[in-house]
Length: 128
Image (cartoon, rainbow, N blue to C red):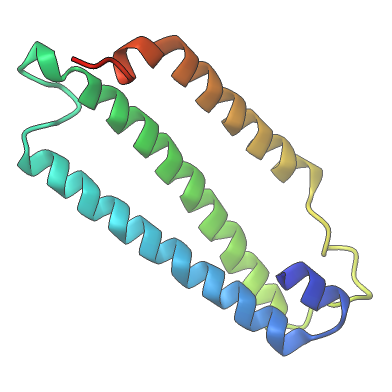
């Protein structure tokens, strides 16, 4: 939606939408931290002393990889917000479209998730 606003030269809407996305991303990271705290309180750490809770290790790996992915997005959003404030993003600029290397990074991360889940699906989704 921010891209559409930028293409229509609705610059204040563009700034607001990027800011909202940035705030929601930070709130997601905080909620992820709370989730990790809950796991630790239940003694479900990355390295478990109880073999029956080995799947917690995979939950940690998946959530940490996702967290790193989100942090990368927050960095890109912060850069976009600064460019938006400086009025470097508008319908006459070339930097509205998604850069190919960011798209490639997103696709690569998705492939890693799919491979990881397919390799460990029996452990992650076992009934017990």
